[in-house]
Image 1 (cartoon, one colour):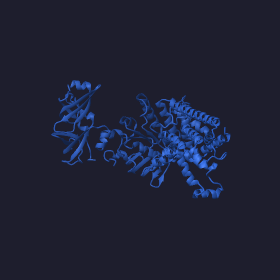
Image 2: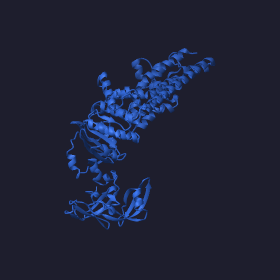
Image 3: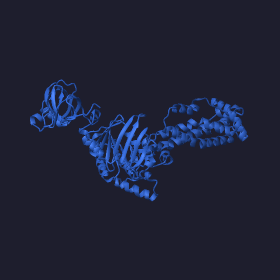
Length: 226
Length: 378
């Protein structure tokens, strides 16, 4: 059982949702309330990580962030550290592949708030900020919760991108998913089995909790489940 | 585009506490001109998709017109250089489905519009308004635990608690059943007398406008067609579109024959018939005109009962279609040498008495005073 890898994965998951959810929340809200010409294209771009093989995303991240690229060179110059094969590189990769998991549930949740309610909030004199905090978030929070859970669980399970961008450096880039793979390669099926079971139980628990909470919310407010 | 003429004098006396002029070609074309005085209720009447709700949202500041001018109580809300936000305008807006915040109680909903006041003052004012809207005892209920009528009252309380400069009601009675609607009509009529702000109500129901409104503006395809006192518009629509909006179906071509100042009557040709109509000396004899008569201007018993009509516009007609719907009979009749049908709804009792049947001839009288000739071919 590789506790360091589990701890690293949990850290990566928390940092990802801490950085990603606030930005995705404003993006999702903006997308939900605005219509413009390039909107389908922008939405498609944001959804690309869902359909692209993770190794392809990892490859492009290597190309863009690698020490040979201008971006990688610039980062190396200012921070003294490369992004690839480093924990910070994993964070960036994780943020990018999780965009659809964070944006889509929240966008759907904001879209489900009737226009009448937002209009009434504005006519009650509420600023956009106050309306978000007192009216929209209380109604959209099942979507926010879903976004957090999906992003976190997906980060824990991400394999291809992590392997491409981070490799498998113990304590630095070896996450639990990589560790499971390593253990299987080393024919240590006991450790691989333990870690797999932990991930399985964790995933089922959080999904059941999220569905239960969202469902209860829907019944309480006469809202359809998001 | 708004019609002038019979209603001009009425319009001039309106104090323009809300004044709106909008010209817009996209996303939906809107050419609107309306006003509403403080303490008055203006009904914006038109079919679905005519742009009336969009106009209301523009008054609230929720939608921005391409160009125009909106002012209320001496303050310019919108013109070419200025667009005040809904937060700055502080209108009392009641959306079609009320827009109540579903996670808040009735009391919290009303308080939500008062966040600029101190907490104790918020509570006091919210309670007062709920009591005023007959919602005592329901303060802690969530909107989903209230009936449609109660929800509407919470929405009105929330809209008015913030001391708005105008009250905007979007189809306020469309989401409730008919018995609740009757009760809410009386409540709105009472409330209207207490308020000293302009009230604008969007509706597609002419009866609501007749019952509740001091003034009415007809709107169709994004254009305001006619403004005035509801009863005047109902009998004197300014053009065909307005006539159709107020439910008039009997539209005919005619020709002015002569004027009779002595009898205060204008003679009008309809096919081979000559009809008397109200005196309109400004129309030159020989002019082709369009004219209209409301359903209740078509009389069946007038001849036998010698009912007092200023003139006897008696016509021989043939019943071409007859449809019985409950206690009512819908008739479509053909006048000799006239292509447009004459339509009327009469009680079943009368139809039986007159032995009306399809393909049968009968006589009707068109009440001269109900004939309305349009000023021009608009």
